[in-house]
Amino acid sequence: MKALFWGTYYQILNLLRVKKAVFFSFIFPAFLFVLFSFIWGNGNLFYSKYILTGVIVLTIASDAIFSIGAVISGYYTTNQIKFLRVLPQNILFHLFVLVLSRLILIYIATIFLLLIGILLFGIQFSLNEYFLMSLSVILGTILFSFIGMFLAGLTKENSQNSSITNMCFYAMLFLSNTFYSITNIYPNMSKFSYLNPFNIVLDLMRETDSIVYALFSSFVWMFVLIIIVVYQYSKLQIKR
Image 1 (cartoon, rainbow, N blue to C red):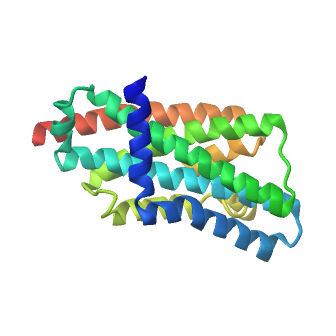
Image 2 (image 1 turned 90 degrees about the vertical axis):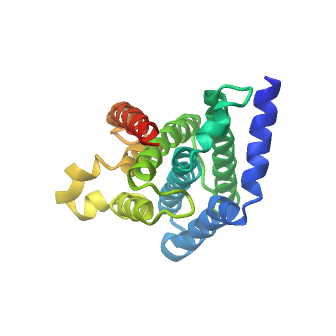
Image 3 (image 1 turned 120 degrees about the horizontal axis):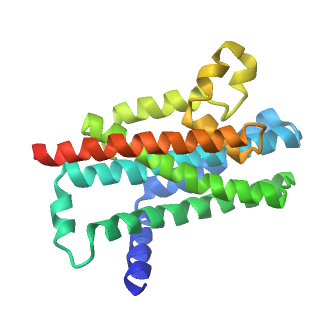
C-alpha cells in the first residue's frame, strides 16, 4: 500500500508539472463550459446541465486518450517498457499507478466543473445522477484509454506527436451529442451515432432511456479493444 500511495502521488505531481496538461484538464474545460453556458444557455438550466455533462465527458476522453493511452503506448514504442520490467515492482503495478493517478485527476477535474455549475448557474443533480456520473468517469476512463492505446499503437505516435489520434478524437467529438443533440438534428445519423464512444458515455451520464444499452455497449467496446490491444502490443514487442 505504501508503494501504491507514493507511486500515485509522484505520478500526480509529475503530471501537474506539465502546464499544458493542467490547462487542458482544468482551465480549458471550465472556460468552455462557462462560455457555452453564457452564450447559448441564456439562463436555461437544462442546457447548462447538458453542456456541463458534455464537457465532463470531453475531459474524460481527452485525459484518457492522451494522458493514459498514448503514454502507455509510448512506453512500448520508445522501448521504455524494458526499463520498467527490471524495476522491483511488477510492470502491471506501474501501469496501474499511472491509470489510478490519472483517474484521480479526472475526478478532481469533474468535481471542479460540478462546483462551477452549482455555484455559478445553480445546477442541481440527484443522488442517482451523481452515482451515474461517478460510474461514467470510471468506465469512460477505461474505454478511452484503450482507444488511445489502439490509435497510438497503430500510428506509432506518442502524446507529443498525435496528429492522427487528434483527428480521430475530434471526429468522435463533433459527431457526438457533446455540445448539442446531433441525433435529433440529423435523425439519419442516429443509428451510427450510438456506436460513438462519446455518446455511449454521455447516455450513461445523462441518465437517458438508453442506460442499459450504454452499459452493454461500453463493455462490448472494452472487450473488443482489449483483444485488439493485447494482440497489437504483443506483435509490437516481437518486432522490437
